[in-house]
Length: 148
Image (cartoon, rainbow, N blue to C red; front, side, top):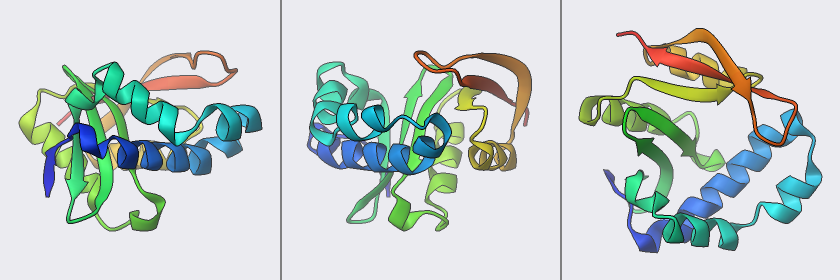
């Protein structure tokens, strides 16, 4: 069910990223130009292939790619589940897979994304008190470290 992402998954990965980011981040950032003009499926798919990002991704695939996780060394960079399939254990399966397969020690999350913070806390991460500005915005990212 969880497998390494392939280039042919890029459009589905981009679709998940675009729509989940719109749903979760538009209320925080209030930036319609970014959400509906700059953030588009095709450019995201091309970027993930051309920059090799897809090489560090895994997908939850039960016949339909429903979620993804992007790992760089010891960091979870991205974890997204399609809005239609949230609250079905997919995000939990992805994060537990990553923790079992890789030496994951930390991640960054948008400070106002309290649902994500609660999710990561339920999976063995805690806030460290470290934060940094989210590039191009007035919002902050907070660092969470694995403690289990």
